[in-house]
Amino acid sequence: MRSAAQKAPPGAPKGSCWETEITPAVIETVTRQEQVTPPETNSAGQIIRPARFRTITRQEVVRPRSERWFETLCPAQLSPDLVATLQRALQVRGHHRSSVTGRLDTSTKQAILAYQRAQGLDSSALSLENARKLGLISVKR
Image (cartoon, rainbow, N blue to C red):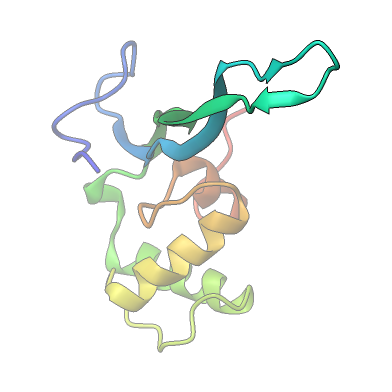
């Protein structure tokens, strides 16, 4: 993933922070038989020479690569108090099983990832939308 400081989507508000969720392309190998020559038959309709086939193998893109931008909390917003509240919110939902430390450590990032996957986002960077769903950030009206 790109750092929010490196890039943001076009039209992003100044001072906002962003991450991307990149889904790789899914490619399948498809093999099929193609007839090269039809069967030859005699006047009675009996096959005197069978049809000839060749095998064709190719790669097909089943799902193209995609890139999805999502707004995140900026590093300055991730205070120890907010991270501790995040850890408690994730504990209540069964995602964070470690102690509340106020540090954005590996277990907290894994809990964020588990929570967000259930929300349709495959990232350990907490989205602003999910922070609002967890009650960490007020919803704009």
